[in-house]
Length: 103
Image 1 (cartoon, rainbow, N blue to C red):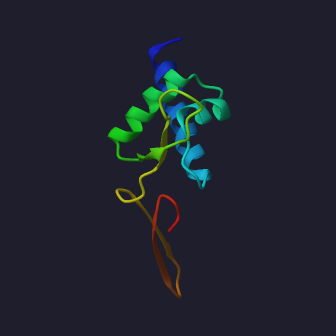
Image 2: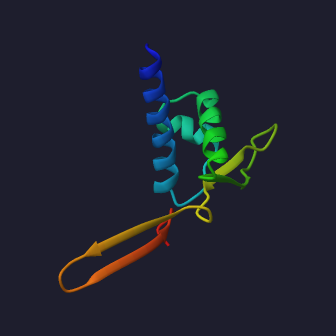
């Protein structure tokens, strides 16, 4: 695998995790994300670090433990990033601002 292909794969996996968190109403653990995507828990951990640095996600508490340490829950951080849409026609201009979760 070339460096370019590795970077493209890393970007694609980040997008998969972002979309998974966007589609789910409830926060998710690393293990749940790994099960949904087929990625390893270690890969998910690295992606979560990158997304946290970009302020795209945040910790959302702790899940129930079946023994051992309680897993951390993650959700999108919709306080830092907004989506903006503009539709311009002859008769009107429509302007929309929304959070990452669509609020």
